[in-house]
Image 1 (cartoon, rainbow, N blue to C red):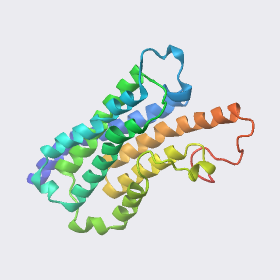
Image 2 (image 1 turned 90 degrees about the horizontal axis):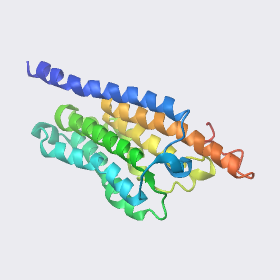
Image 3 (image 1 turned 180 degrees about the vertical axis):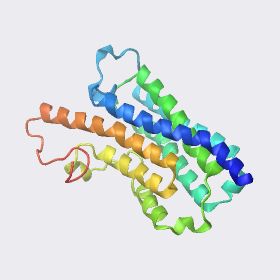
Length: 239
């Protein structure tokens, strides 16, 4: 009876994960035809703008604040589970750096259109709730999940791909090395969590960053005649 009740309560969270998958596909479709509303692709007609540091901190903060709130009211049983704690810790560590440290390392970033910042803010709140609610209330793992190959392989990208590292070596092979790192990182998180919620976020990351990476690559080819023709867009040696 208790298991049936838990599954019933989890269904709305699964619905939110499927909705994120639909948002991923919609984002891919839109960004394939429309320039991303920030950085080198933004235009003066983008409306009011927010300083880069402020925009980054504000839009990313819900991905930290919402999970912290969910952890504060988490199921004690879930927090006693080592896999749940480790996965939550990885998510929180990423967004601690992303929202509280990285913005203050930005030097000379271009202002971000206000509407872009607002969209990112609400998505981060949405996804932060989705991931942390699942791990803090519903996710059930065997005690030895932390030794499962899926967890170990998935954990490696999380540990080896610090947020916004410069990926200097990879830029020799791909234009969007930072995006490649982001995709690998959240793909690893999805593998480690082995969940619909983690998979939805990995899909969203891929679908949104792929068309932006293509536009970045095309911009460099048009801007610089000597831009290396062997350099791929996103995935070393492949694409």
